[in-house]
Amino acid sequence: NYSYPLQIRRNDEIGQLSESFNLMQTQLQHNDLARKSFISNVSHDFQSPLMNIQGYADLLKSPDLSDSDRMAYTSIIDQEAKRLSSLTRQLLLLTSLDQGAYPMKHTTVKLDEQLKRVVQKYRWRLEEEDINISYNLPPTSIQGDVELLENVWENLLTNAIKYNKPGGSIEISLKSTDAGVDVAFKDSGIGIAREAIEQLFERFYRVDSSRKTDGTGLGLSIVQQIVTLHHGTINVESIIGEGSEFTLHFPHTVSKR
Ligand code: ADP
Image (cartoon, rainbow, N blue to C red; front, side):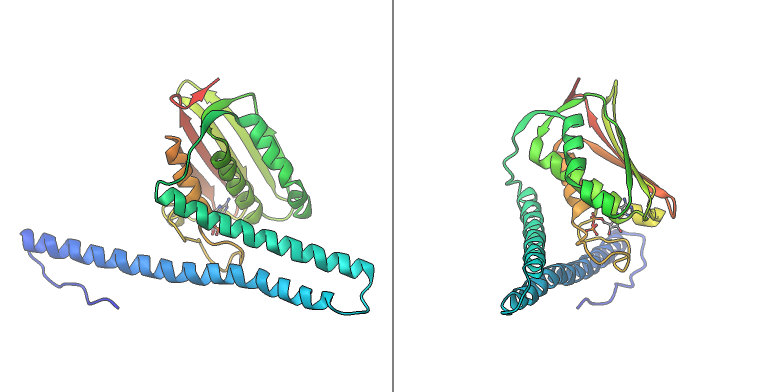
């Protein structure tokens, strides 16, 4: 628990000191809230696949089970285990990026090919949610870590799917300019309020946790960390109810044609 803000109104160093003290206090409270909701999100994210695995493993013990049921239950268990493993991977990745411990391996990454591969991986989900995807991907390369960059595209694509509408669309485009390379993900989804955009990349932040239950608010903070490691920047444009566009810019120091 925190003490109350200092009520010192003075125009000297003491006044300034109490002002920064109050600011720090607000920040701490904010972090504390974020941490609590993060723990509850992560626990939920672990809990629900674990319950499913347990439940279906129990059902598998039943002696009079048809082959098709057995197959169906096994595949659910498999899916849920994969979900758990991807969540653990994200948490581990964030920790190692945080500690500067991630072993970056720089190579020439063909972005057009990589982006197409990532889309391919999520084809089934796009079809399931009836989302139309289009892209404009001329051959473009940058210097970077293949795995980290793949993580960025996966996060942006899965967000564009998760926060889209059924029958919606996604456009992915690549552009080389004099300044470097731009990669844009545009969706026709629910959009993000202007006030929320500022906090989007904060760790644990979720615009409105009731909008979607799956998610930890970690994805975009990982994206931000990785883009920064590649000396890039991120710009977000969004209109509520119409959609969002995330544009990543990589300067020429890392991009080459
Ligand atoms: P999460 O695990 O919640 O998806 P992220 O860090 O990836 O976490 O995103 C943070 C929040 O930003 C999300 O909870 C969501 O509300 C919002 N968001 C991210 N991408 C989009 C998007 N393309 N359209 C609308 N909202 C988005």
